[in-house]
Each structure stands twice: as C-alpha cells, then as structure tokens.
Image (cartoon, rainbow, N blue to C red):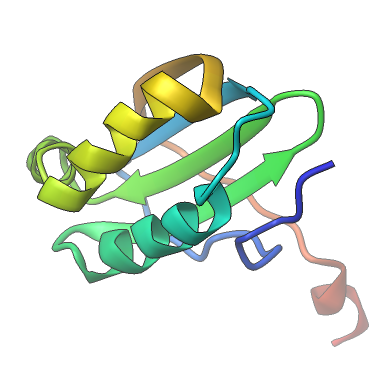
Length: 118
C-alpha cells in the first residue's frame, strides 16, 4: 500500500463548465522519489494559471483527477518543464501503465452530511 500524498478531500470547484484530467495508473515497485516528485507536481500545478483543484486515491489502481479552467491551461501544464521530466520518469520507472483522459464537466451535483444538521 502506498501512502496518500494528497489531502483526502473533495476538490471545491467553481460552477461548470470546466475540464477534468483523469489520470489512471498501475504502479511498479520502483518508486524511488515517487512521493516527493508527486507532492512537488501538486505544488507546481496549484501555482499554474487555470488550476482549480485535485483529488487522488490509490488502491489496486491509482486515480488522480485534476480540474482546470480550460484546455489552454491543461496544455500549458503538460508542457511545464518539471512536469515533463516527471512524466518521463513515470514512464521509465514508476508506472506499469497509465491512461490519461480529458473531459468537459458540464454539470456537477454534490452532497455533504455536514449540511444535514444545519
């Protein structure tokens, strides 16, 4: 089991429309510097224009969803130098396989048990 490097919270996003980048992974056992690099990628993404939030979980497969204002913001993040280097290390060391999907979020529904008692 791999420790979670992200805050276990649901991202607070603005009203749609916006984009979701869905990153699904299966990791190798070669995880040198993985947590440190992943934490740094979150820091860098949060500083990128157009970044809206992130959610992540890992059991048998990893699932990270990052939220972005528009496709241009996603494109700029893809080409950010440190992110490019991390992606290459992921391909050579950390991942057995991955799939990345980009989706337009058109609607959003939410529930919070906290609101039941108010």
